[in-house]
Length: 446
Ligand SMILES: Cc1cc2nc3c(=O)[nH]c(=O)nc-3n(C[C@H](O)[C@H](O)[C@H](O)COP(=O)(O)OP(=O)(O)OC[C@H]3O[C@@H](n4cnc5c(N)ncnc54)[C@H](O)[C@@H]3O)c2cc1C
Image (spheres, rainbow, N blue to C red):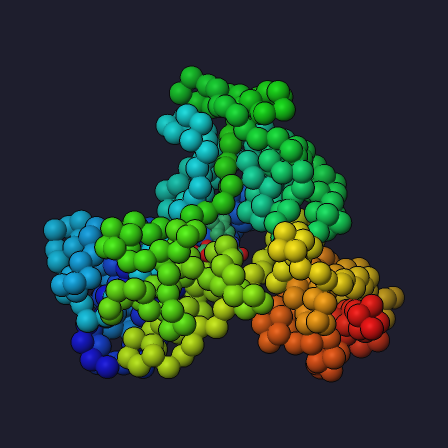
């Protein structure tokens, strides 16, 4: 492939598109348009806010792309004309393209309760300026309110409590459970116990109803009737895809408002692809759309689309929703569909719960408990799992389970999958939780 490729958005999705195009089609002229100049790696923003990672060490850089010969421009792309194959920039410039990739990412969901312009109320943004403002305010604050008991709110609450001593941290969650969309009640309870043991005050089943303060937030009223005195509020109630450019260009969106793509990540407009958080994902289990917005999935998309710009050869199979959060040294993760999702979908399932250790023998110093819950559908196909533990083995296990779900393996196949064992870092071969869980599930299914 030759010609001009234009990428809109320089997050992990856009970055990897540029890298793949330069790897496979070095003769292509590649221009990446990124609106924001100075940004942070979003995944580690909670560590920066809590002061565990210096702001300047978390800077996100597109320099590597420049070394690969990609032209990087800091500017907003304002209008896309897919008929003429032209992109109009805020600077007044017009770029012609042969292929264009939308990698426009996410923006935070907002409460819209009059908090706009009120000092001390923050939404998470990638810009270094905003992260700096939050961390400086958090450093000064005595009472910090986190709104949203999902993965980011939980992670932030734990990190702030762990690193910054003497802060009062309150977490407000509208539903009756933390991370209720991802975890079963037992895992949500465990999460809450860990947060509470850390000193975080958790208020569930209540929502923020108003903010009060003269120029700067002083109090927050909750739907429960409680009024909280606060110094800083960080709102993390979820993320939305940024699709304005695509929508105004007449590109098809799905019912949930994300850019619709085919298996090669092509949009409804000729020559236009979409990758990452701005595009819709379907779940490999049932082909239904899932609301997964993760850097790891965006990065994968980038390579797939980058290659497909030349010849559509690499299929972007559906995904397995998954995620990890932590409270101190406790890690919680899930993959696929767990209890709530399966009940909502009306799908019958069996579960198997295994309590084991993350090393062996258990007398070995540093060995901790590990809990795993697996979900199989009635046909015996693995559809999900939850993991809790105190070691870095948790993310590895989430990845492992997610892979088994992705492969749509039957309980017999899960039983026959091999798994590595090493005393200081994995469970014992005699208590490998996935195999043991499969054994129990096979018995329940028989
Ligand atoms: C606090 C936090 C923690 C997270 N932790 C994790 C984690 O542990 N693991 C994980 O996998 N994911 C995590 N995520 C999610 C992850 O950050 C996102 O999924 C990832 O950034 C998405 O990548 P993307 O390239 O699709 O979009 P983005 O990173 O949003 O990149 C899109 C880029 O496009 C630019 N852009 C948009 N419109 C235009 C335009 N019109 N013109 C020019 N530029 C434009 C934006 O400025 C942006 O830089 C976390 C997110 C947050 C906020």
